[in-house]
Length: 193
Image (cartoon, rainbow, N blue to C red):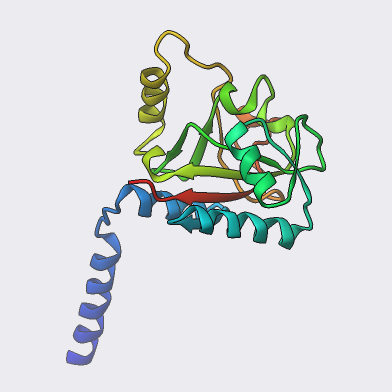
């Protein structure tokens, strides 16, 4: 009888441990959900690490040309001997920044500042996103508030998010039917705090 009591006590303790709430920091929470959704995460503490990571991504995927609109990022591409294409083509990856990284679900928030008037679903499947740790926010509401605060009087349009980083995975949400925001996404996260 004592054997069974010990056995059940152990299982009760295991259940209690599993039920305990874990409070992660914003960056830990974001990384957890981002990787869980299939995103490829690269943490960088120096610009040299960003350059090396960008070179490795391009080499791994045999990319020598990348779509990019941001002048600072175009400079980074040129420094790494990668051609910057100014227009969207389905077969060429897209290198961009973002508005915010959403910690509570691992989403990445974009606006017309990065996408112009293009919808995420119509863009290439391959994204490389350069972001900084200061862009981390707790939830989508904070991200939208951040956009409103940062762009007073000139709020960007086309605010949307990439929510899934596995191309082959289907989204069962009927509201998203025919509008897949799934992308093969690399995130270069630069520590700026």
